[in-house]
Each structure stands twice: as structure tokens, then as C-alpha cells.
Image (tube, rainbow, N blue to C red; front, side, top):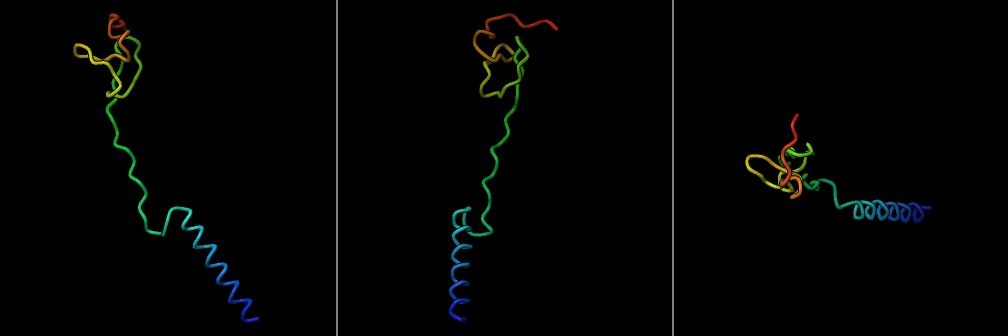
Length: 76
């Protein structure tokens, strides 16, 4: 009976250890930091909000694409 309990305990420890290994390692590891936020700009032609890195710069304004950069700004 003692051997059965011993082997059951060893099996349980193996299962728990493998679950931790598959789930991302030992406890206490830090999660990845979220990406840094980016400034958003508004297209002067259609009003679409988009990240500054994806926008087309104009004279003091931003456009969402080259076609909208060529069009005149929308009037409110």
C-alpha cells in the first residue's frame, strides 16, 4: 500500500511539473511588457483616426493615404 501511495505522489508531481513547464515556466516569471503607445492623427480629408507612423504628412496636417493627401481638406 505504501508503494502505491509513493508512485501516485510521484505521478502527481510529474503531471503538475509538466503543466507548469508547458504553461510558460516556473512561477515568478514576468509577462512580456505591452507595446508602447503611439500618437494618433486624424485624416484632414475623411476624418479617419490612424497611427502617426501610418499617416501621410502634409503641410501641417495628416492624411490616411496618398490619394487623400492630394484632395482638398473637408470643410466642417
